[in-house]
Image (cartoon, rainbow, N blue to C red; front, side):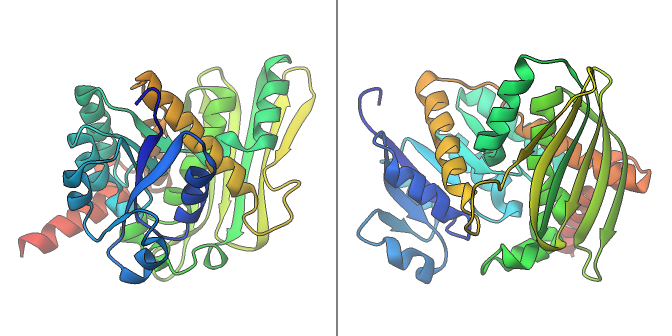
Length: 325
């Protein structure tokens, strides 16, 4: 594997998969070996380019892949990643790592036991404006406050992936799905975080549509995450105040005129980092579990509840009760 292309299998061909497929195609050291989706129409454009499967277990059993990308709906992440890890393969999973904190912890344990790379695709880490901000901050005063905004009208972004608007399959809504990217950016800038408070607004279907989450860093910095799935337009940015009174900003959409145009270079960065970790045998925790735990903590803070009362845990209990009937 050291001198040959890394053979990639992509499991899940929804709206986000095109960015992974393009990144694989453009990389001289990656090759698309197999794809999987239960929908024949999703597989049709890829026939002749890679082996096509309706069942990921058959893809894994047939071999011929070195690593897998999981880009399926959120509620499937845990089970798919577990199967990939049990097959002895590295896995790159779309954020969130899972929809339950306990599942994230179990996946981390499985990856450690197998000695396999478990990598969460926090694509905003690789945004050129974010990377420039991180570089500038490295030589300056320490941060004392920060804010990440993730504002969009979700219906404009999901294509045919209606599962985003199902709280059980999504894991909640904007907190479960966009929250991990925002939390990961703040962890990159500030280090370890804890949730101080949360205000979340849901629609009639129970989907989080807006949220404002307050956080504190281990170093004492204050931080805010603002999320909105009903915003007219799109705004995704970072603001940081430093101890010397100066401020730094990063517009994640700056310089990208087209819809979702920034994602092409971000997902190229995701797969380049994933490949580096796989080839280097890097099995360290990449922050996927920490971001998931912050999602769970935000839901609990909103309710003033215990971990057992979080929306994610309550949903899991309801599913278990239905299965037992």
